[in-house]
Amino acid sequence: MWAKDLKEAAAFIRERDDFLIVSHVQPDGDAISSTVATGWLLEKLGKKFTMLNEGPVPSRLQFLWKSSDILTLDGSESTPNRQYRNVICVDCADYARVGKTNQWFAPDAELLNIDHHPTNNGFGIVNLMKFHASATAEILFELLDELNLKLDSDVATAIYTGLLTDTGGFRYSNTSPLVMAMASRLLEAGVNGPELAELLLERMTMGQLLVVQRGLSRLSFSPDQRIGWLWVNSEDLNETGATNEDLEGLVNYPRNIEGVEVGILFKQNGEESVKVSLRSAGRVNVAAVAQHFGGGGHVRAAGCRLTDPLSEAIDQVVGYVQKALDEE
Image (cartoon, rainbow, N blue to C red; front, side):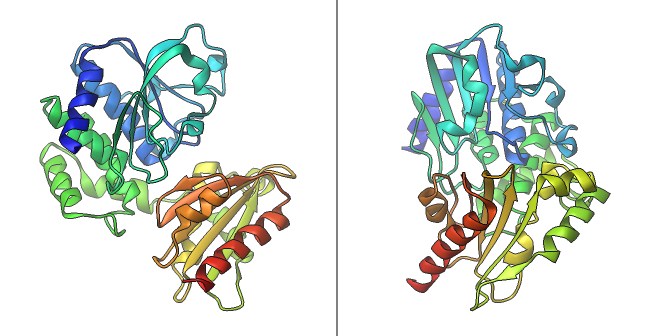
């Protein structure tokens, strides 16, 4: 079945031209890596393409091949001057995750959906989905092989970045033997592994340090201490000089505490909009929790958004997680 899916995805690309490549809102390492890796393979095949995201490329990912060519909807590109019939969606757990980039889709657009999230419902005309893959970048590695494209340092660095960030530096349970075999090939193709690890996993901005300090000052626990959570708001970002990308990894602080089964980060945007990030130590399927609130993701890492005041959002999500723990 997987071999058939790879062939169908390769045919979608070979038989068409003039593509739009999009990924999910608030892009992370895998989203941007997968976007530029897809652009790279299209360029190697002599295809025309445009890369687009609703939000900007995080500063720490701006070293990636042609990342500066990714158009964003937070500026002059908010109103499309044309629409695309051939669309490739990468790392989008569901169609809604493309955000406002769908304004660039033609009414008769046909989508190639490349993703690794178990909550993906297969919204493309062609779906290249591998739910046990560590990252969408892992799937693209296999697609490159299917298309007989030889790795160079540019695409190898992009794919390695996706693997590195979505496996937590090759530490999470999704770090399979296949992932390590791929990483070996990518290193042979010219990737500087230690440099990427330092840049993407270890380096902190001063704003990030300050917003982590604020978040940890609000760290709370359930009575049985199996759930830990913290929260930040837009005011915290403004006052510390931190950005949304500086919040990445903050949810891991409560999750990493001994005895905690689920860590949760609540990011308040306005009076009644709360973004929720969930991380599980393994006992709770947080993808199911996120789906209950209209979100999605993976068994151990998921997210959702609630249109409620912060205190109500915390009560709802923590209560639902506690129920899941009590029923295990």
